[in-house]
Image 1 (cartoon, rainbow, N blue to C red):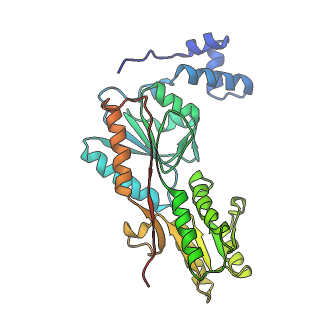
Image 2: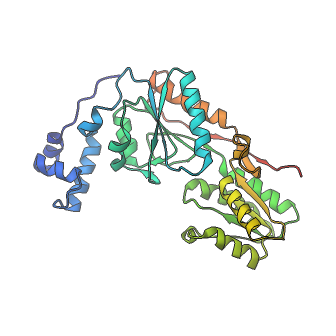
Image 3: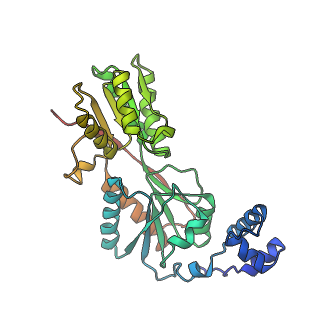
Length: 325
Protein backbone atom coordinates (compact mmCIF):
# COMPACT_ATOMS: atom_id res chain seq x y z
CA UNK A 1 0.00 0.00 0.00
CA UNK A 2 1.20 3.50 -0.77
CA UNK A 3 2.48 5.39 2.28
CA UNK A 4 0.21 8.29 3.21
CA UNK A 5 1.51 11.78 4.10
CA UNK A 6 1.06 12.46 7.79
CA UNK A 7 -1.35 15.34 8.29
CA UNK A 8 -0.27 17.83 10.96
CA UNK A 9 -1.96 20.58 12.97
CA UNK A 10 -0.25 23.05 10.64
CA UNK A 11 -2.08 21.57 7.63
CA UNK A 12 -5.42 21.96 9.39
CA UNK A 13 -4.56 25.50 10.51
CA UNK A 14 -3.68 26.54 6.95
CA UNK A 15 -6.98 25.16 5.65
CA UNK A 16 -9.00 26.70 8.51
CA UNK A 17 -7.24 30.06 8.44
CA UNK A 18 -6.50 30.04 12.18
CA UNK A 19 -3.45 29.48 14.36
CA UNK A 20 -1.96 26.07 15.13
CA UNK A 21 -2.62 26.70 18.81
CA UNK A 22 -6.30 27.39 18.11
CA UNK A 23 -6.55 24.17 16.11
CA UNK A 24 -4.99 22.22 18.97
CA UNK A 25 -7.40 23.69 21.50
CA UNK A 26 -10.39 23.05 19.21
CA UNK A 27 -9.47 19.38 18.84
CA UNK A 28 -9.09 19.11 22.62
CA UNK A 29 -12.59 20.58 23.02
CA UNK A 30 -11.26 23.57 24.93
CA UNK A 31 -14.06 25.79 26.34
CA UNK A 32 -12.40 28.97 25.01
CA UNK A 33 -13.02 27.91 21.40
CA UNK A 34 -16.51 28.43 19.95
CA UNK A 35 -18.60 25.41 18.95
CA UNK A 36 -18.82 26.49 15.26
CA UNK A 37 -15.01 26.74 15.12
CA UNK A 38 -14.60 23.34 16.81
CA UNK A 39 -17.03 21.78 14.35
CA UNK A 40 -15.24 23.36 11.37
CA UNK A 41 -11.82 22.23 12.61
CA UNK A 42 -13.04 18.66 13.25
CA UNK A 43 -14.56 18.53 9.76
CA UNK A 44 -11.32 19.70 8.15
CA UNK A 45 -9.31 17.25 10.27
CA UNK A 46 -11.53 14.39 9.12
CA UNK A 47 -11.38 15.45 5.47
CA UNK A 48 -7.59 15.60 5.56
CA UNK A 49 -7.29 12.33 7.46
CA UNK A 50 -5.61 13.81 10.52
CA UNK A 51 -4.54 11.40 13.25
CA UNK A 52 -3.35 12.63 16.70
CA UNK A 53 0.30 11.76 17.35
CA UNK A 54 -0.62 9.40 20.18
CA UNK A 55 -2.91 7.52 17.80
CA UNK A 56 -0.66 7.72 14.76
CA UNK A 57 2.11 5.93 16.66
CA UNK A 58 -0.22 3.01 17.34
CA UNK A 59 -1.92 2.73 13.95
CA UNK A 60 -1.16 -0.15 11.63
CA UNK A 61 1.88 -0.69 9.52
CA UNK A 62 2.24 -3.06 6.58
CA UNK A 63 3.40 -5.92 8.79
CA UNK A 64 0.60 -5.70 11.36
CA UNK A 65 -1.47 -8.82 11.86
CA UNK A 66 -3.65 -7.56 14.71
CA UNK A 67 -7.41 -7.08 14.32
CA UNK A 68 -9.42 -4.84 16.66
CA UNK A 69 -12.70 -6.35 17.87
CA UNK A 70 -15.06 -3.65 19.17
CA UNK A 71 -18.15 -4.27 21.30
CA UNK A 72 -20.31 -2.22 23.70
CA UNK A 73 -22.25 -4.60 25.93
CA UNK A 74 -20.91 -6.58 28.90
CA UNK A 75 -24.24 -8.24 29.69
CA UNK A 76 -25.61 -9.72 26.47
CA UNK A 77 -24.06 -13.19 25.95
CA UNK A 78 -24.49 -12.65 22.19
CA UNK A 79 -21.29 -10.60 22.18
CA UNK A 80 -19.33 -13.14 24.21
CA UNK A 81 -20.32 -15.88 21.76
CA UNK A 82 -19.19 -13.93 18.71
CA UNK A 83 -16.03 -12.56 20.35
CA UNK A 84 -14.88 -16.05 21.32
CA UNK A 85 -15.47 -17.39 17.81
CA UNK A 86 -13.68 -14.44 16.20
CA UNK A 87 -10.70 -14.89 18.53
CA UNK A 88 -10.33 -18.59 17.65
CA UNK A 89 -10.86 -18.22 13.91
CA UNK A 90 -8.50 -15.22 13.61
CA UNK A 91 -5.84 -17.22 15.47
CA UNK A 92 -6.28 -20.14 13.05
CA UNK A 93 -5.57 -17.70 10.22
CA UNK A 94 -2.32 -16.54 11.79
CA UNK A 95 -3.65 -13.24 13.14
CA UNK A 96 -4.20 -11.83 16.61
CA UNK A 97 -7.21 -10.05 18.05
CA UNK A 98 -7.53 -7.27 20.63
CA UNK A 99 -10.85 -6.74 22.39
CA UNK A 100 -11.89 -3.08 22.63
CA UNK A 101 -14.82 -1.89 24.75
CA UNK A 102 -16.85 1.16 23.71
CA UNK A 103 -19.39 2.69 26.09
CA UNK A 104 -21.48 4.29 23.34
CA UNK A 105 -24.10 3.18 20.82
CA UNK A 106 -22.18 4.91 18.02
CA UNK A 107 -18.44 4.98 17.49
CA UNK A 108 -17.48 8.65 17.06
CA UNK A 109 -14.23 10.47 16.36
CA UNK A 110 -13.94 11.06 20.11
CA UNK A 111 -13.54 7.29 20.54
CA UNK A 112 -10.65 6.91 18.10
CA UNK A 113 -7.80 7.84 20.42
CA UNK A 114 -9.21 5.62 23.17
CA UNK A 115 -9.63 2.51 21.05
CA UNK A 116 -6.60 2.66 18.75
CA UNK A 117 -4.10 1.35 21.29
CA UNK A 118 -2.23 -0.98 18.96
CA UNK A 119 -1.25 -1.32 15.32
CA UNK A 120 -4.40 -2.67 13.72
CA UNK A 121 -4.62 -4.03 10.23
CA UNK A 122 -8.43 -4.16 10.41
CA UNK A 123 -11.49 -3.66 12.59
CA UNK A 124 -14.41 -6.00 13.26
CA UNK A 125 -17.06 -4.11 15.19
CA UNK A 126 -20.46 -4.66 16.78
CA UNK A 127 -20.70 -0.87 17.23
CA UNK A 128 -21.86 1.23 14.29
CA UNK A 129 -19.40 3.97 13.29
CA UNK A 130 -20.33 7.52 12.34
CA UNK A 131 -19.52 8.62 8.80
CA UNK A 132 -16.50 10.52 10.13
CA UNK A 133 -15.11 7.37 11.73
CA UNK A 134 -15.72 5.29 8.60
CA UNK A 135 -13.96 7.93 6.51
CA UNK A 136 -11.10 7.99 9.02
CA UNK A 137 -10.46 4.26 8.55
CA UNK A 138 -10.87 4.53 4.79
CA UNK A 139 -8.21 7.23 4.59
CA UNK A 140 -5.86 5.08 6.66
CA UNK A 141 -6.65 2.05 4.46
CA UNK A 142 -7.85 0.02 7.44
CA UNK A 143 -10.78 -2.27 6.50
CA UNK A 144 -13.81 -2.03 8.80
CA UNK A 145 -16.44 -4.78 9.01
CA UNK A 146 -19.63 -4.11 10.98
CA UNK A 147 -21.31 -7.27 12.33
CA UNK A 148 -24.98 -7.56 13.26
CA UNK A 149 -26.13 -4.17 11.95
CA UNK A 150 -27.35 -3.18 8.49
CA UNK A 151 -25.84 0.30 8.31
CA UNK A 152 -26.23 3.04 5.71
CA UNK A 153 -22.78 4.41 6.57
CA UNK A 154 -20.43 4.40 3.59
CA UNK A 155 -16.91 2.93 3.41
CA UNK A 156 -17.57 -0.10 5.60
CA UNK A 157 -18.54 -3.72 5.08
CA UNK A 158 -21.75 -4.99 6.72
CA UNK A 159 -22.48 -8.55 7.82
CA UNK A 160 -25.83 -9.14 9.49
CA UNK A 161 -28.75 -11.55 9.87
CA UNK A 162 -32.14 -11.38 8.16
CA UNK A 163 -33.91 -10.04 11.22
CA UNK A 164 -36.98 -8.99 9.26
CA UNK A 165 -37.55 -12.60 8.24
CA UNK A 166 -36.73 -13.72 11.79
CA UNK A 167 -39.51 -11.44 13.03
CA UNK A 168 -41.84 -12.76 10.34
CA UNK A 169 -41.20 -16.36 11.41
CA UNK A 170 -42.12 -15.49 14.99
CA UNK A 171 -45.18 -13.60 13.72
CA UNK A 172 -46.30 -16.59 11.68
CA UNK A 173 -45.90 -18.87 14.68
CA UNK A 174 -48.10 -16.52 16.72
CA UNK A 175 -50.75 -16.22 14.01
CA UNK A 176 -50.88 -19.91 13.13
CA UNK A 177 -51.33 -21.11 16.71
CA UNK A 178 -54.02 -20.56 19.33
CA UNK A 179 -52.52 -17.48 20.93
CA UNK A 180 -54.73 -14.42 21.34
CA UNK A 181 -52.59 -11.32 21.92
CA UNK A 182 -48.87 -10.63 21.54
CA UNK A 183 -46.32 -8.22 22.98
CA UNK A 184 -42.99 -7.18 21.42
CA UNK A 185 -40.45 -6.44 24.13
CA UNK A 186 -37.06 -4.79 23.56
CA UNK A 187 -34.37 -3.04 25.55
CA UNK A 188 -32.47 -1.86 22.48
CA UNK A 189 -32.69 1.21 20.26
CA UNK A 190 -30.75 -0.52 17.46
CA UNK A 191 -31.92 -0.87 13.90
CA UNK A 192 -31.61 -4.60 14.53
CA UNK A 193 -34.45 -4.40 17.03
CA UNK A 194 -36.48 -2.32 14.59
CA UNK A 195 -36.05 -4.91 11.83
CA UNK A 196 -37.21 -7.71 14.15
CA UNK A 197 -40.22 -5.64 15.14
CA UNK A 198 -40.91 -4.73 11.51
CA UNK A 199 -41.06 -8.36 10.35
CA UNK A 200 -43.16 -9.42 13.33
CA UNK A 201 -45.67 -6.55 13.06
CA UNK A 202 -45.98 -6.99 9.31
CA UNK A 203 -47.29 -10.54 9.72
CA UNK A 204 -49.44 -9.88 12.78
CA UNK A 205 -51.01 -6.75 11.29
CA UNK A 206 -52.13 -8.82 8.30
CA UNK A 207 -54.06 -11.11 10.65
CA UNK A 208 -56.99 -10.35 12.94
CA UNK A 209 -54.90 -10.85 16.05
CA UNK A 210 -53.90 -7.86 18.22
CA UNK A 211 -50.43 -7.10 19.48
CA UNK A 212 -48.76 -4.43 21.57
CA UNK A 213 -45.30 -3.10 22.33
CA UNK A 214 -43.59 -0.97 24.95
CA UNK A 215 -41.90 2.19 23.59
CA UNK A 216 -38.19 2.37 24.33
CA UNK A 217 -38.54 5.50 26.50
CA UNK A 218 -40.11 3.32 29.18
CA UNK A 219 -36.97 1.24 29.70
CA UNK A 220 -36.69 1.99 33.41
CA UNK A 221 -38.26 -0.98 35.19
CA UNK A 222 -39.45 -2.23 31.82
CA UNK A 223 -39.70 -5.84 32.99
CA UNK A 224 -42.17 -4.75 35.66
CA UNK A 225 -43.98 -2.62 33.07
CA UNK A 226 -44.13 -5.64 30.75
CA UNK A 227 -45.55 -7.77 33.56
CA UNK A 228 -48.29 -5.24 34.27
CA UNK A 229 -49.10 -5.03 30.56
CA UNK A 230 -49.25 -8.82 30.25
CA UNK A 231 -51.70 -9.00 33.15
CA UNK A 232 -53.88 -5.99 32.27
CA UNK A 233 -54.14 -6.78 28.55
CA UNK A 234 -54.39 -10.57 28.93
CA UNK A 235 -51.31 -11.17 26.75
CA UNK A 236 -50.31 -14.78 26.17
CA UNK A 237 -47.41 -14.38 23.70
CA UNK A 238 -44.22 -12.30 24.08
CA UNK A 239 -41.53 -11.84 21.42
CA UNK A 240 -38.34 -10.59 23.06
CA UNK A 241 -35.44 -8.82 21.35
CA UNK A 242 -32.93 -11.26 22.83
CA UNK A 243 -32.68 -14.51 24.76
CA UNK A 244 -31.23 -12.68 27.76
CA UNK A 245 -34.31 -10.46 27.86
CA UNK A 246 -36.60 -13.49 27.46
CA UNK A 247 -34.84 -15.29 30.33
CA UNK A 248 -35.14 -12.20 32.52
CA UNK A 249 -38.87 -11.98 31.81
CA UNK A 250 -39.41 -15.71 32.47
CA UNK A 251 -37.60 -15.36 35.79
CA UNK A 252 -39.71 -12.36 36.78
CA UNK A 253 -42.98 -14.10 35.87
CA UNK A 254 -41.91 -17.09 37.93
CA UNK A 255 -41.09 -14.78 40.84
CA UNK A 256 -44.59 -13.30 40.53
CA UNK A 257 -46.03 -16.84 40.49
CA UNK A 258 -47.74 -16.20 37.16
CA UNK A 259 -50.23 -19.03 36.70
CA UNK A 260 -51.29 -18.25 33.15
CA UNK A 261 -49.13 -19.94 30.52
CA UNK A 262 -47.26 -17.34 28.46
CA UNK A 263 -45.37 -18.25 25.30
CA UNK A 264 -42.06 -16.37 25.32
CA UNK A 265 -39.71 -16.38 22.31
CA UNK A 266 -36.23 -14.88 22.35
CA UNK A 267 -33.51 -14.28 19.78
CA UNK A 268 -29.94 -15.62 19.21
CA UNK A 269 -30.45 -19.08 20.79
CA UNK A 270 -27.61 -18.62 23.29
CA UNK A 271 -28.38 -21.95 25.02
CA UNK A 272 -26.76 -23.88 22.16
CA UNK A 273 -23.45 -22.17 23.03
CA UNK A 274 -23.86 -21.76 26.79
CA UNK A 275 -26.03 -24.57 28.27
CA UNK A 276 -25.87 -22.78 31.63
CA UNK A 277 -28.50 -20.37 30.25
CA UNK A 278 -32.12 -21.48 30.23
CA UNK A 279 -33.22 -23.13 27.00
CA UNK A 280 -35.92 -20.93 25.45
CA UNK A 281 -37.72 -20.85 22.13
CA UNK A 282 -35.59 -18.62 19.96
CA UNK A 283 -34.48 -17.44 16.52
CA UNK A 284 -31.05 -18.76 15.53
CA UNK A 285 -28.57 -18.33 12.70
CA UNK A 286 -25.30 -19.89 11.53
CA UNK A 287 -22.88 -18.02 13.79
CA UNK A 288 -19.82 -19.86 12.48
CA UNK A 289 -20.59 -18.86 8.92
CA UNK A 290 -21.02 -15.20 9.87
CA UNK A 291 -17.74 -15.12 11.81
CA UNK A 292 -15.81 -16.85 9.03
CA UNK A 293 -17.17 -14.47 6.40
CA UNK A 294 -16.34 -11.35 8.41
CA UNK A 295 -12.83 -12.51 9.34
CA UNK A 296 -12.00 -13.77 5.85
CA UNK A 297 -13.20 -10.48 4.37
CA UNK A 298 -10.92 -8.42 6.65
CA UNK A 299 -7.93 -10.70 5.98
CA UNK A 300 -8.52 -10.70 2.21
CA UNK A 301 -8.50 -6.90 2.23
CA UNK A 302 -5.38 -6.74 4.39
CA UNK A 303 -3.57 -9.11 2.01
CA UNK A 304 -5.03 -7.23 -0.97
CA UNK A 305 -6.78 -10.32 -2.31
CA UNK A 306 -9.87 -8.12 -2.27
CA UNK A 307 -9.99 -4.43 -3.20
CA UNK A 308 -9.96 -2.42 0.02
CA UNK A 309 -12.16 0.22 -1.66
CA UNK A 310 -14.84 -2.30 -2.65
CA UNK A 311 -17.47 -2.67 0.08
CA UNK A 312 -19.58 -5.75 0.75
CA UNK A 313 -22.97 -6.31 2.36
CA UNK A 314 -23.90 -9.86 3.30
CA UNK A 315 -27.15 -11.00 4.93
CA UNK A 316 -27.46 -14.44 6.55
CA UNK A 317 -30.73 -16.38 7.03
CA UNK A 318 -32.46 -16.96 10.37
CA UNK A 319 -34.39 -19.96 11.68
CA UNK A 320 -37.07 -20.16 14.36
CA UNK A 321 -36.24 -22.94 16.83
CA UNK A 322 -39.16 -24.13 18.96
CA UNK A 323 -38.38 -26.54 21.79
CA UNK A 324 -40.40 -29.73 21.63
CA UNK A 325 -42.44 -30.15 24.80
